[in-house]
Image 1 (cartoon, rainbow, N blue to C red):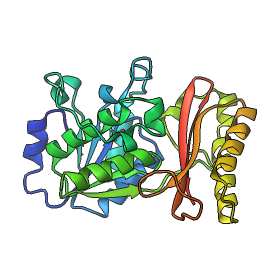
Image 2 (tube, rainbow, N blue to C red):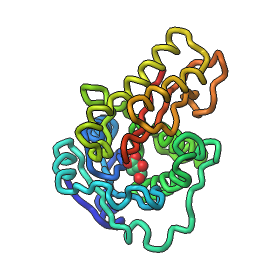
Image 3 (spheres, rainbow, N blue to C red):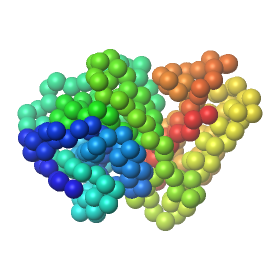
Length: 275
Ligand code: PAF
């Protein structure tokens, strides 16, 4: 695997690379990331992974500084997964001047759900992803469905900018007890880690209720929030939404997804399940 820390170096290496797949990450790679890399290998001649902890998508007081940086271990995992190129720029390479031009996703997509609790987050995500698209110029890019709203924002951005990049969503990878793999799971204490699968169980219950015909979304959402609170969580939201645009479903809508974000101790976890 070739490791590049400059845009010029990466671009030079990708000349005549054939079909290129991009998998952007912030590092601290787990099996969910590696599944995306493996999936990417099936889509392209060359897979480019990126590792860049993007300050723009963190709010002051969030975990930008403590976000785990495990570069050597990440490189080993990427090479073993068949990734040909890793782009790992520093901040000066990605943002040599203040990034005054930014991508502002529409509020109905970016200010709901996670965007309501993390104002500006999706502007930061869309801006760095657009930069990575310009730098790598991939044919296809892969993102995990665990960040469901992020995937929707990126799909819509690509469509509205007529960008010729195919966007592929990867299924969420879970631990055997159901907890969705996430770099932030590493922040959990042993007791919190034992409690954490409750989030998946609560979402599963909502999905089962909808499949069984329940249609009062508010009752289901409030019930799920109470169950989380009973386990000591502080939920930001549990929300049933339409898969396509994450807007509120009406009573007879199908094609739904249930999404949740909740704090366990000082760790904020997100998860979702398609109905
Ligand atoms: O999902 C992530 O890890 C990040 O939001 C991404 C897409 C790499 C942009 O920084």
